[in-house]
Amino acid sequence: MINIKEDERLSKLNHSCAHLLAQAVKHLYPEAKFWVGPVISEGFYYDIDLGDNKITDDDIAKLEKEMKKISKDGKRIVRHELTREEALEMFHDDPYKIDLINNMEDNTVISCYSQGDFTDLCRGPHVDSVKELKYFKLIKFSGAYWKGDAKNKMLQRIYGVCFDNQEDLEKCLAEIEEAKMRDHRKIGKDLNIFMQHDLVGKGMPLWLPNGAIVRRQLENYIYEKEQALGYQHVYTPCVGTVDLYKTSGHWDHYKENMFPSMKVDDEEFVLRPMNCPHHMLVYGNELHSYRDLPVRIGEFATDFRYEASGAVKGLERVRCMCQNDAHLFVTKEQIGEEFKKVVSLILDVYRDFGLKNYTFRLSLRDPMDKEKYFDDDAMWNEAENKLREVLNDLGVEYFEAIGEAAFYGPKLDVEVKPAVGSEVTLSTCQLDFLLPRRFDLSFINKNGEKEVPVVLHRAIFGTFDRFTAFLLEETKGILPFWLAPVEVNIIPVSTEHHLDYCNKIRDMLRENHIRCEVDARNEKLGYKMRESQMKKIPHTIVIGDNEVSNNSINYRNYGSNETNEISLDEYKELVLNLIKEKK
Image (cartoon, rainbow, N blue to C red):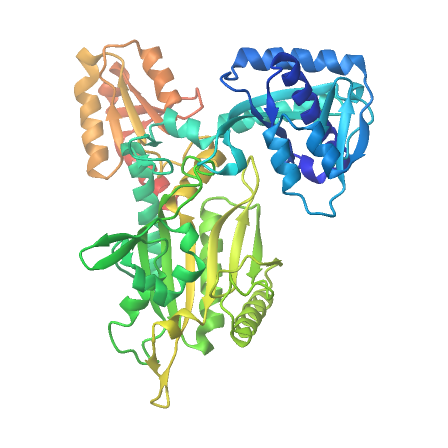
């Protein structure tokens, strides 16, 4: 989908269409007050105070009708410049516009745009006339806190999109429908992967049995790869004292993203936002020689981060997450080799999952930001140059992003382009010279002297939550055989005559750790088959007289009407190979 905000013509069209929406709202709701109506990558929105009125689907249709009526009138859109006093007088009855005006810099050029009976405060630019706004659609509506602050009033946000012609509009609407079909929140609900409940809280997903299977399979997959590479897994508490995070530096640099602290007896605790402080202590629990390094400590760790309620989204953006985390303690001489191994592991995993559309981003500090980043120029220069050197040696294409580093060091982020929507960061590897010093970590080098190790922070899946959301949207919920919550669904043509054989197949498959079910309900065969497809089960087996007589099975792949009849033993080998090869 095109980024409307980055296209000059489309940006102007959509900005103007936001005003067209506001004018239609004012016609239908004369008491309406308006906050802001910016252009976004997907089109535009406007935040509106409608008092006690609540927008419905019927209201959206009425607004579109009124917008078309205004567009046909063909009024010119005229810009006016105002003094601060004139602006305050013009919008004296709209507290939201007054707030905008009062917060403008003294030298700001204040302007408004008029179109017929409607005038709105705006910097522009706009198209020349409302008659250019023919091909638009209001997409959705939602609540939005004024200024994004949950302490403020809830406004109503209406989203829309506008193009120069019907063809582009229809193409965009088709992409929006495709995005809806791929939305992991819908798929997650349909397939019983996860749920959410207000009693638990926003951004706190509950993994249902089907989702727990998917997550466990992902955990087993990456654990086996890490174990083969010499990682040692640990379990650490999901809380820590405030002093722990003061030692690490997170309290000074990351406090606003953490949950509030809580006092218990004579200690003050906080839900952990990341695992590196705990892993520093695990490393420091025993003496290390240079011969021991690298030490690779991994954990599937539950972390908590405060995300604004308006930002949380299904499994993609949560407040409680499980990271596929690890910290590698290395000598300076080992940085290059270990960093290469991390990149190789990332690429290996991406090949297994068929991920091809991704880019590497070298995230660097902003040297001018002395608050966000630990202030040590020599340390930063050494760390950033080391990562550049390794990436150049690997021949990996990458781009640099100033201001995207962690507070303690630069990092490599892998930006993956999903089937719909904007890029997401999945994998990351961060280089850290700082935290080992703050925790007074060391190893005995070849000269018998104490030396501070360097740490690589890395996450291959990122979080299991976001990776699962990504997978559901990439596959539309059609997960590969080895990941599907139910791999095989067995349906008897007659429960009276064929159920015993179905149960025999089920028991044999389960003995080989294949997840299968028997649908013994008193329903028609066609109904059961359709439901098996709706659940996106990879294999559906139908058992009738012929299969019982021949000690065989008749199976169909998901989405196919083609039947395959093979012996029971052949089928067992087939599915075991599917699982082993991760196809």
